[in-house]
Amino acid sequence: MGGKKKDEKIVVTTYGGQSEGVTGSITEISYKKDDNSRGFILLEMGGIQGNNTVLGEYQENKKLLEDIPIEDVEYVFIAHSHQDHEMHLPYLSANNFKGRIIMTKENLEISKKLLLDSTYIHGKNIEYLKSKGKKVKPFYSEQNCYEVFDKIDTYDINKIYKLNDNLSFRFRTNSHVVGSTQIELFIKKPSGQIKKILYTSDLGSPMNKEFQPFLKDNYIVNKANLVLMESTYGSSERSFSRKDCIKERDELKSLIQEFVLNNHRNLMIPCFSYGRLQSMMVFVYENYKDTWNMEIPIVVDTALGNDINTVYEKILEGEELEYWKEVKSWKAFKFIKDYKGTITFLSTKQNGLIFSSSGMISAGHSVIYAKQLLGNSNDCIAFCGYCSPNTIGGKILNESQRTVKIEDSVVLKRCTIKRFSTFSSHAQQIDLVNYIKQLNCDQIVLHHGDTESKMELKIVANEELRKINKTTKITCSYKNMQIVL
Image (cartoon, rainbow, N blue to C red):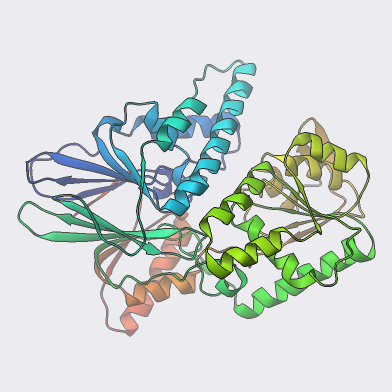
């Protein structure tokens, strides 16, 4: 992968999981320096997620990590802190990485929490596999995780920084999650010619940004030689309108009214700890701050989510910070951080609105609540985000399955199950096409999407470009695809 070359070409290799799917974002760029050596950088360091088995996921990530020439890499850029974009950063410390990791100060604060959590889960997965007789070794340890923090340098958004005579970069705003960015790379060939690469990472949707607190607008980068654009929601099947956003939020309020406030039953909303949880907390505060029955708790049960809540107090500023403090101090919230607190709450047989992680019910305290609620016809589980089909959440949502295995129990699905699709902050097909139409570039490579999503987005984008007399080349990524500039 990325073998050293004798010419001035810039070589971009999409070999991570994002080349064929939606997780495991790792892209390599190699370029020739003025001293005739070749520089190597990585765009993100994400993990592959969503495999049907713990062993299968371990094997996929093992193969991915073994391909990386760690000792050659000078810089690793992180655009935002979701685990499919940065989970394997501790692997660098465990494998003689001598370079630097580049991100914003906001993402550093978030990463400190997320990386420790994912490293802990990785350790638990290794213990589980060993208990099943599998010969596996951890990719990295908690010590490696702390060590990698010392390899991170932070930079401001919207400023160009020169890293060496041939490489400069700039972060641009992105409305995917709080702190998320796009990356502009400026690579100067020894001849003096400068090539610009835009890496969008996951983009946010302008369609529902008004419903997502604390986000910045997507900055539209108009010019580049090469654009690496995500296509997670490239399919029209995942499209929705502002009217749909309002309708679904009204439907969620009706569920809360029916199950929690009127019938005093449980409604659980599995939440991703970073982004979704905070949005849901703001949602219930804005809609119920003056009317909520304070005898009914709104449970925020997630250790990582509560840590991220605290991080928000460090990275938000001005009016946004004051408003977040106001939301967080609302007396209706009952914060639970550990397993003992979860069991204590359940043992009281108290009912309420419950936010718990993980969002896919793949691990964490949401598994405990799902096991308790799924078989009860009086309760409700409402999903406000994507669930991989292989997770407990995905199996709960699978209408063809009457039962779901949760830990050591097989549970009959009897509770009310709801799925909402407009709470995601991912850019939709129309958002991606509108961005593409504003680009003046030589080539766009669609990645971070399944094959169907990329192909549909490519077809629709080409049709729209023809209408405005543009002939931008659009291609879809594949494993070990190389783009030469």
